[in-house]
Length: 236
Length: 236
DNA sequence: ACTACGACGTTTGTCTACCATAGCCACCAA
DNA sequence: TTGGTGGCTATGGTAGACAAACGTCGTAGT
Image (cartoon, rainbow over all chains, first blue to last red; front, side):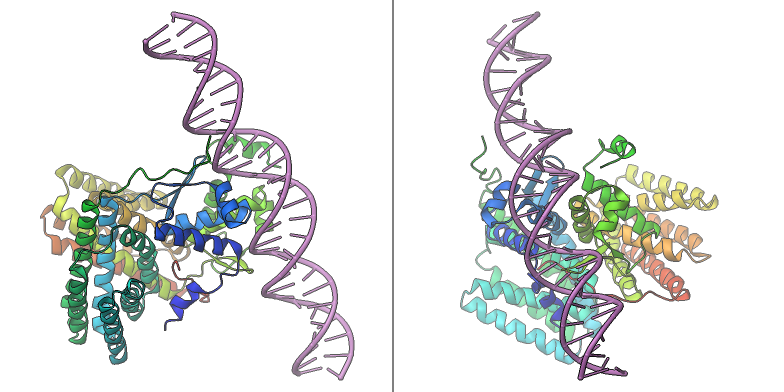
């Protein structure tokens, strides 16, 4: 069941996958900030590999939407603005509504129990202010909904956006009372699924997504985004 | 060494993009059939380039979902089975419903007129059995709905599936009376948008997608479906 | 002083050559 | 027949070189 997710973790066998993992982590962590140029020779030096794996990794990351490659101009970290945040969350909203509605139709009792278990773990992580566990369990919650739906393609599309969202959250954080609202909204989703109420599950999941979107946008507007981020030194 | 003929094309784009375009076209046209291995040395000979651009093109096509790359085993054309078809159309259904509903909210009169104009051209193309124009105008119809919604990210996700769907249609074709039903369903979508009826537009678009899915699956079941291969899911 | 043009450096894109390693398959022996 | 072994093929990776494109800066001309 969870093998779908674990498979993506496995096989850091090849070099270009390790390179892609490293660059992805740095983008998510904010080491590479939006709009920053990613120069191939610099990355080669940093990561101790030649240009070939770096270029392949950048191609892969472009496919994930984390970087943008312009012909003859090179790669840059994808810039994030309010419009993009809203667009991504709108896509997530319709997908999550689909997942929740499907789950309300076909989830087994065991799967619902697992959802509740993950929800409790998420609650604990929030109480202990463990950001890493909070992010992981929140991810597991939504990924499990996707797995229950049985639509791997939709889950792929949905997870593709996760890294961009993690980069946003890393940059802007949560508002003070968002965490408790998240728990309430998750409980509403679980409740609707348990009741086999498809429209209610769809609406609950959609609203959960859109409220999260509003939260991050309000956070982003408080902290003025360092749009024209750091440039790399060494040129010229 | 590249031939003189290829050099004449050379100015248009970078080499790995031309390679990706060529391989993509061949996958869509069925020259490279699902589950077929794509060996780098063979592609180098066919296309007159070295291995480096070929590998980058394959990475890009993997990002588009057209090929699957297994570490140390190489690239294969993504296998298509009934499950994948259904999953892709389900994703398209929720996105198209979103597009149509948003269009019912915010489409200008000019945009609705343009929708109608494209619809008429599609009608003409079907009357003349012009498959190329039919495919193009159908694409324009749905792409315009996406553009009207103003959500470029959603449109990107939606269009990413287009090539896979074209490959399917190329393989299985339409059922005999599907074309006239398509026209009726498009008219219902336009009618709902003109009436600013959001739920009706959403349902019409969703049903249009699911009926198209049913059609292609019934077509596919006539021909024995290809063997299901390993799927690859999402980013990290 | 201002604009336009050209030289220059930087960076990307590509190719060649070569090597290491993982899979695959055929062959051979028990 | 079955199992192991060896070789072949394809992938993955490195190094180095060159061509083309883009930006910048300086200079010449108006």
